[in-house]
Length: 129
Image (cartoon, rainbow, N blue to C red):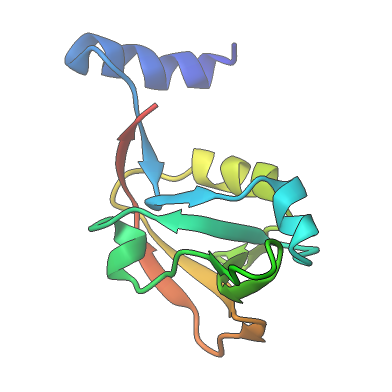
């Protein structure tokens, strides 16, 4: 384990008894499921947690057409965070790993197949990790 990681985790464990990390407040669809829905790049938001930073920023939970299991009728895809491309879930996890609770991040989104012209700013919250 890298020394920087130990230096970050041990004080949290001593102070709180648990480790926290920065979080958007969303659950992501597995990459394989997103690909099955026709999403070839980015991270499909499967669920937005109520009252989370993502919810407050207006991100949306994916919805499927009940007649066609893999057809999305409403969805947001995270394409980039602070200008850094996010091709899949692992890339998003790596980017968020370096962020702190309270940091503001700019998300480049695709909503229902259309790239949103403006970035969405989300203030990261705390989650136990």
